[in-house]
Length: 285
Ligand SMILES: C[S@@+](CC[C@H](N)C(=O)[O-])C[C@H]1O[C@@H](n2cnc3c(N)ncnc32)[C@H](O)[C@@H]1O
Image 1 (cartoon, rainbow, N blue to C red):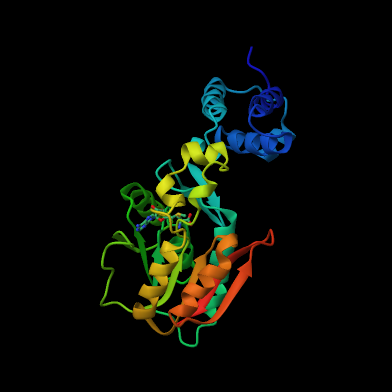
Image 2 (cartoon, rainbow, N blue to C red):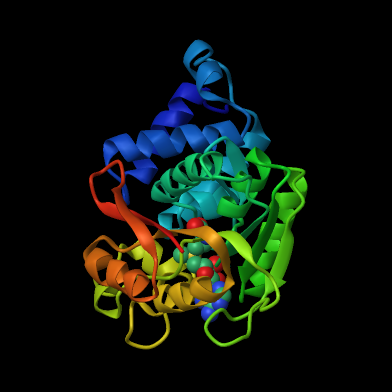
């Protein structure tokens, strides 16, 4: 006879415990149970419910994937970002909580612009998390989302469509191609690849084995290459008093600030994330 959902939950937590601590295992188990049709409220109020065969099979296949170290977002194909549920797959970075903080900062920067901004560029859009959030909040602003990865753009387009936001997508290599040299942006936002090559060894296994490396590591040895290009591009293609908001590597905040200063950016602020790490740079042309 099939087990009840409380017993099944306990078994799932035990299986997840191979890779995660107790607390994480429980949190992930709730996510997986939601996917198989038993949300947390139902689970807590109806623990004796006998699980359906198809739910058990689905759960088992999720647990098999999880046991290989695959992140839960790739296993269920979705990630939670602010108020949105975004589709993700292995071709795209799983959006991080610090990027939610960047978006919230961008909301207030946009609200405080001297004149209503008209055009925003998101460099390295990935799942589209930043571009979609901004367009959703400010539907009148024209938002362009750029990435060089076809997989990422396909997912970002799907996400935009599902969430009913109209974004311009641009496939280009930001380091190599000439980007929209006839367009002037009010705001350039970016969470570019910024992990240092020396950090490869220390990356958690689920990141190293499953997330796309070009989304994490810039090419070559210069960890700041994207900031150099964004600063140079922004100096030419931002409107007067146009701004940049970029996510940064906490260890590189001084160097990145100098890069923007050298290109004439003013009013540079470095903001800490929730865990107290210097994570976001805002600057004005
Ligand atoms: C750190 S991820 C950020 C993704 C998403 N914006 C987020 O915050 O979750 C960096 C993104 O930059 C893209 N990328 C890497 N190199 C690029 C390049 N040379 N030109 C354009 N996009 C690039 C990657 O495909 C990836 O989607």
